[in-house]
Length: 303
Length: 334
Image: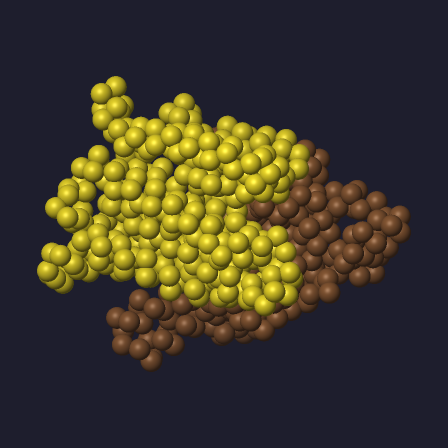
């Protein structure tokens, strides 16, 4: 029972992580831009969703508002800043987007204040669903899994089976060549950047009732997404998908299974010290392992 | 700079070098006199600010070696700052808990031990991260730093998220490091020592090899050097300077919390190096002093000081059209 629940938790977390890392990996893949603002877009998405949910009591409206607001913000960001740092060295991109994070984090603190915002799960989804006799699972989390699967499928169809997706893939694997063949890579990139931001906002809005919405929530997520796309291979959406599931599995089972396991092996005082520590770093150990084995990640895009 | 010197004749070079030395002598004398000047004009508060700037400056000198001269974009440098800070706080806590002899809780013992801890971690992180390059390297150093950050957050024995209070000031040749002027001078000596050591290193054959590696790895490899080892050495040396800066920070605030290692702080260190002029001498110290002073001034003006600071940085980066590599070539041209 517990195992099934943990599996579902891992899948739910993995899908949300995929929503966040898909945009990040494409932005890097197509334009070679390191974008630190992605976590902040996720955070602001969550704040917008929380505000709308609390004032209107409509969860659907909250999600729509978050996604729409971030679409606008991402478009402005792309046109105003990101577009100007194409082709610059990675360090300048890191610094420019770092500066944007500084501004947006404090601006969000100015608007929403330093306290956490709590969001109630929508009435309809607040109970548990009996999956099979004797086992219930949170309806809300099931909904997240459904949305995540739907978004992943949609992205898959878009990227693997549409003309637009073909252009995206071509631009990710060789932007110069794609440009030569007449693709408007800049416009394509702008669209991908905005869609990536919208997916991050969707993730933020979906997680708002589960986690407390607060300043800085985007930072941990950003770094987890980086770990994910490094494992999967920069620029690869499939890599981001597999990477998300791997990271989520190790993180979830690391937290759930490692401490009791260690308690069985080590003396209690050592186990209580090492257990939480090991489980919080498990994903980084996995990343280090993957890099030792394949320095370009599991699904390298560029040869 | 050297090429320019030989072209324009040694006479000019010697003269500029003398002039340069005179300027530096004045700067150092002013720096030594600073705490008394600050006292006299009634802004003694800035003595501890200056000590903090020097501690960050030492870490930034290290990052300038890694980033500016080695061309390695490490976005995890604050982890080593934090490691040095934690190592010194934890060691002195354990020493005072164990009732060990007092001489153990002294600067040479604790700071050297803190440096050794930083060395070990930097070797591990560097050895793994340097298998990759470019964007991967940036993200991986970021990830490892975050890992170390989480280790200390889950270290409940040493305060976890709340941080750890140091048990008291360390001893150093009978000096009272609790006195802010004394600590400032100690930090100043360390900062000047760090800058001179890095300059010395860069003037050596190793320094040539490091800069050559930044410019073209294949060429250096073709000459028979292992660029991996060259880069790893710079990475570890830079990290150890950050560790020293961290130990000074612990001594200054008598407190260390995981937030020192946060990725924003790594970003801050990077900004300092850029402000000072990446890949140029004394960039780390100048950048750290400017950045910390900016932070202080802006935070007295508004609670949301990150907004003007971020906009300032953004303008700086967006309008230096050629980017950071442009700054480097500008230096070479001058």
